[in-house]
Amino acid sequence: MNANSLKNKTVNFYGREFAVNPDVLIPRPETEMIIDAVLNLVGKPFLPGIKPNKAMLSLNLKIVDVGTGSGCIAVTLKKEIPEAEITATDISKTALNVAKENAKKFGTDINFVESDLLDKIDFAPDLVVANLPYVDKDWDWIDKEALAKEPSIALYAENRGLALIYKLIDQVAEQKISHLILEADPCQHEAIINYAMEKKYVLQETRGFILNFIC
Ligand SMILES: C[S@@+](CC[C@H](N)C(=O)[O-])C[C@H]1O[C@@H](n2cnc3c(N)ncnc32)[C@H](O)[C@@H]1O
Picture: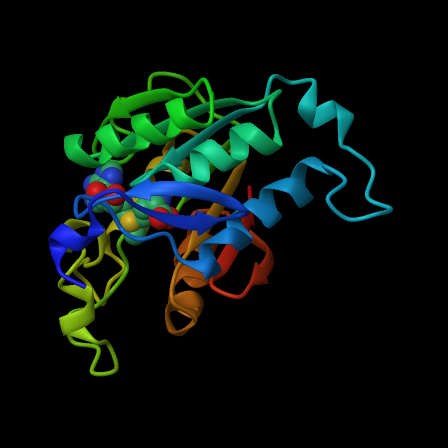
């Protein structure tokens, strides 16, 4: 698959077909667990027997998706939790264009902000979700040739792949945001949990690649 063959391509994420192009990460199945974790948090009955958390939903729940890429997380959350106000940020203008295209495709009202992490967010969200770049260039098990078809800015981070995740935890802690759901490679989880604990965040659960923190 070369870059051109990605034009007009779609990828299934949580049962919906998202447009992708070479400016964005191809949504991965492991990221779908972010959606399950959020639904579990708000008690949306995606499984029988789970009662909606009316208190949380009635708060006009404000969710920020940091590093939205194709917009797959932000758009899916808006479709699954229409009561929530969803803001999506990315440092890449071209990625945001793809996310806006997908928001339009699915008729979702999402606030898009070009921002380095939460820098341009001027309100306090109830929940931050993020699938940030976390690949360490030195990992010898990654298929660099396959990953070369996606933007490096969507994949790689300094400091063993943890630099952006740590910076986001710092920002979330400074703003006293109560809920944080992150994706990272399982080999990074221990380091992230320890870092978050220093900032008074407690791990609620892990689901595959996903870490769910509360403060
Ligand atoms: C791993 S991709 C995830 C895309 C999408 N959320 C998904 O799950 O498929 C990471 C995204 O973060 C964006 N990004 C990288 N550095 C960033 C930063 N400092 N602030 C905001 N977004 C950033 C990239 O442009 C990319 O779209």
